[in-house]
Each structure stands twice: as structure tokens, then as C-alpha cells.
Image (cartoon, rainbow, N blue to C red; front, side):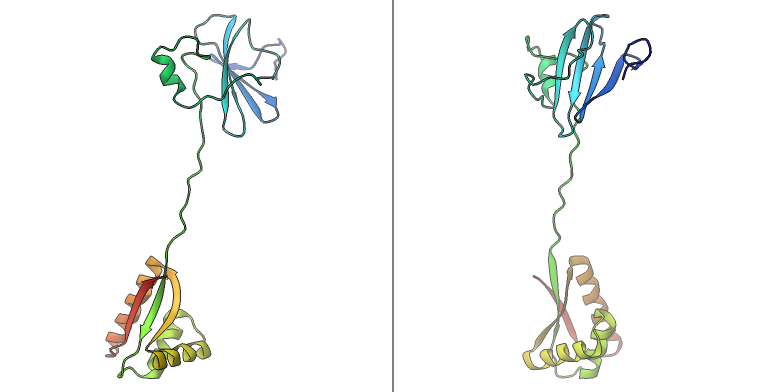
Length: 184
């Protein structure tokens, strides 16, 4: 993309253009004078090359012989590595995707006791765990026969909230119902 006079569009000392195939080229006249240009090429995959060109910006887009630069190459160059391509004022901008970790899941369990009525346990399962009447009755009978029953599997915060809600509701209605959570 050149303007009518054949020059690159320029803002201050920087010129940029799309060289095709996902390559963006940036030319920086960084104090080298009119005929010396630093060119940075950035690909879609996050790699970039820098090349010093005498006589202006290159017209070709073949940069096969250039090596990818790491982000700390500028620091090494400033320390004084002669013969390295590029120069001061050249930088590579990288974009990283954060890695998200899957949350741990916790089982919410109801424990059997000899004093809490079966109807109350069914009501708790319907109210706090969204179970229909048949599923709540099935879980209540499992708790009654096996001493423990799983109400659901949730992330830590949700499981903790449900345990607290069930325990508070049972205490409010003067029942010794126990609800606990364990890591799945």
C-alpha cells in the first residue's frame, strides 16, 4: 500500500503495510538516515524477524533466511553483541493466551440420622438441589438404607453454599440433619 507519490504511509518514523499471507511489515527509520531502514516482520503465529536494509524498504516479501527473534533479544543487543541483526528501537510484541485450569469438583452428601423425618429430607432435596419428587425420594431411601447419599456434584464455592444452606435450614426447623462435601 503506497500513496500516490510511491512512498509508504508514514506516521512519525514508522511505516507499516500488509505484505500478504498474514505478514505485517513495519519499517522504522531509527536515526540511520534516509537510506537505512529497520524492518520488522510479524507473522500470525507470533514469530517476528528484524532486518536492516540499506537503500530503503525491500520490495520483496521473502524473509526465509531470517531467524525468529525472542522477546529478550533487544536486551542482549543493548549489552553489546556485534553482528546481531536488528538494532536499537526494534521490539517484538507477543500475545499469550492464558491457560485456564479446570475447577475441582466436590460431592455434596447427606448423612443418615435417626431423628430427621423422611419427608423433610425429600423437601430439602427438592428445595436446595432442584430434584423432582421421584429423584428426591430415591436419594432419601438410599440415605436411609446405606447411611449416606449424594445430592449433587458442584464446584467448591457452590458445594460449600449448598452445605451451609441445608445445615441452616435443618437447624431452623430443629432437625439434626448433617450435610457434608468431599472432593470427587
